[in-house]
Each structure stands twice: as structure tokens, then as C-alpha cells.
Length: 155
Image (tube, rainbow, N blue to C red; front, side, top):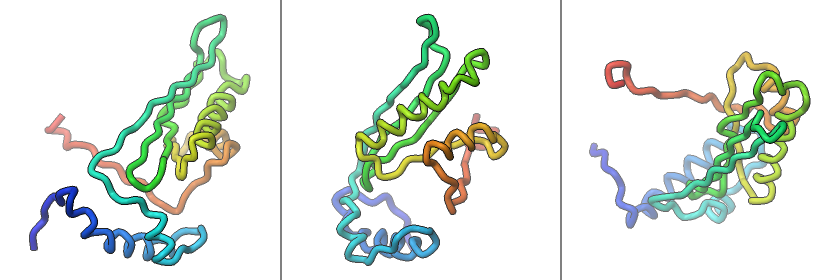
């Protein structure tokens, strides 16, 4: 058995594997099932690179920034995706709906640009953030997110 980095010219060789994965995985999620043909038509051709965009929204009070919402847009080859990378309001300005307005600007950007998937990450115990994101249409998923960090000795 050999593991190799696939050259971009050979990406079409693994398309059937990607379709197998998508077909099998959809049974684990609560969304409409697509046929292999529908998945094949919806799956863009895999490319070796992709680009992203940063979008920063701010709330100002007396001309000074008191809140921010940082969004990222990117297309890994499966459609435009979005992420709310950071959302923050200074403590003195909280309780006035600024986070709701900032997040609303992000969601409007996602809608306007035709984002096919958007995510936001927060701590399990951050209940105010959970309520805020749920009110904006975000919902927990069936997926578990695992993270990898370099070993302590590598830092």
C-alpha cells in the first residue's frame, strides 16, 4: 500500500470515491437524500487551490469600535461556504442588541452571496452565544468537531 499526494491532473480519478463518501454519509444526517447522479451533478470539480475573503463588520459608539463580527467566505470546491470567525462586543456596550445586529449583517452577507453552508464555533457552556446563534438560524449539527494542535514540544 502506498500513500501519495495526488497531482491535480489526477483529481478526476478519485471522484467516484468522493461520491461514495457523500452517498454513504448522507444517511447519518437529517436532510433530503440525493441520488448518486444528483450528487455528481452538484459536486463541483475538485481544484488544487481556493481563495477566501475576510469581511469585518463593526459597531461604533461615538466613533469608536465597540463590537466586531469577522466573517470568512471561501469555496473549497463544493460551493461557497461561510464562517463567523469572531463575534465580540465590549462589556460596556452589551445588552443593546449589537451582537444581534452584527450577526445579522453576517447572515445577510451569506444570503446575498449564495453561501451553501455556514458555521460558527463557540464554547459548549457559552449559553448567551448559543441563544444568539440559534436566533439567527444556526443550529447544532449531528457532527462532532475534533481539533488537532501541534505537540507541545513542537511549539
